[in-house]
Image 1 (tube, rainbow, N blue to C red):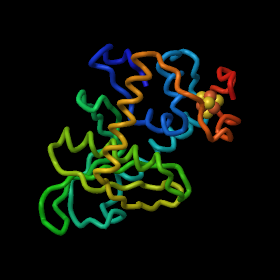
Image 2 (cartoon, rainbow, N blue to C red; image 1 turned 180 degrees about the vertical axis):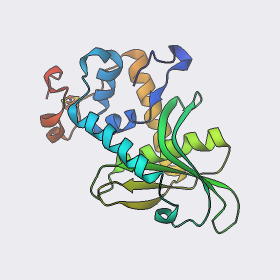
Image 3 (cartoon, rainbow, N blue to C red; image 1 turned 30 degrees about the vertical axis):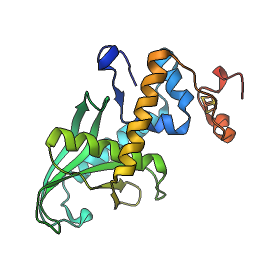
Image 4 (cartoon, helix red, strand yellow; image 1 turned 30 degrees about the horizontal axis):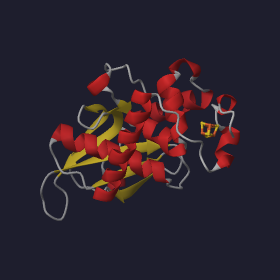
Length: 206
Ligand code: SF4
């Protein structure tokens, strides 16, 4: 997240990927927002970005078959931003299609993941956030999305529900408060996370 990236105050905006950090431990958001210089790009992050790009190139040659769609328009690597949502990000793939029960146009976000198969909660929330951005930018309903699991080469369809959208809104509101007031949240209660956290050396109370 770069609170200063799009200006301060009302223009505060978070990356969709910051939601992952928030759900890992809200204090990580504090470190990113208030100590942005302390976090290096890790080898794993770099590898993830490179593998994601390679997978995208392969995916560009594929059809809509993994998504069980017979027709639709595909866009790759789509930049999305919303001032109202305070979110921005680059979506791996977006589909515009009317191949559904009602025959009306819908937008579908697709997020590539390097995970072997297990779907964790923050994946759903990141997908939901992309869906909310896509709905606003394209002006189309977003009711579902796909996680494309790169190692398995398989797409998993997930519903994007109002309850999940509300979770994203609440999380972004809290992230905004952390960044604006430079408020350090309490440490995670799942202390096992601290053992592998890159900010462990800054947390003297765990
Ligand atoms: S060390 Fe623990 S409490 Fe501190 S930021 Fe990391 S996960 Fe959160």
